[in-house]
Image (tube, helix red, strand yellow):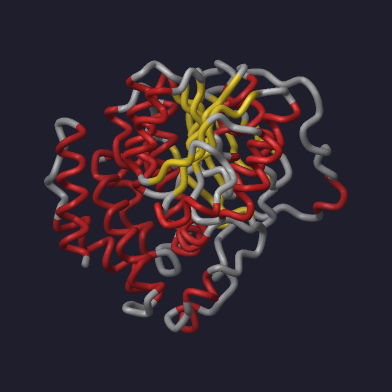
Length: 357
């Protein structure tokens, strides 16, 4: 990999991608960022990209670069113009879908940290060009190793409210949901972790990636085991690694990695391991888990309703559990939709958002 285009450079995946790219002398052809211009300028100084793109036109004058563009449409043009064989897509939310489709349509590889691309449109994406940047899916890929598998498991931390009384959760605020016990990521993914929507999305991604519906998720509070594989011979293996995205990123950029990316897991300091079920009483979204694995085309409905629900929760227009209620209501309302192409995906997305609002 001689050069990459990096979408979402100032988020945690973007920052770690730049660390790995520097380590392996991978050139950064273009940086795409949101509104953290201060960090972006530091990245420009260090990595000298050919092109830079930001979210808001009004911020252009603050960016220290001769070629600064803005807006979602410009991302697609930038991908088209680029000579890099790989696009790292670490954009958050539905915004990330169009760049994934554009890159794959041009035969470029996509190192994908944007869950929503596969959740919304997995059926229409060329999976042979996708490498997922996610500790759970990376763990599964690492473990499967061409052996016959009977069931796949991913783990969940349980989110910010896993130890709260359910009564207390009803009154939880947006700021409470951002206090994750194990890691620091962006707002959306942390909220999705508290509702368990994040894990539902990861099950859908795993379905598209590994071609099976025999997938489940369990809570492992330490976030040390990210994935487990149950094989047809009756044995089960687990993938242990620290909470650090540099490992999946290194494999996505390099294909194969033989040098040490993370310090080895210290088994003695880990203490006991405990696996717990994900209960619908605490995570109501889990009631549709079986159904959505049978009907993965409904991911577009869940995603659109979820993005509106998070917006409402942030603006204090709904309570914590009402987010899941809103999603489940939309899921029932649109249960018979099935997109035949990407245009219909966009139409359904629009209709669900309008309904959820």
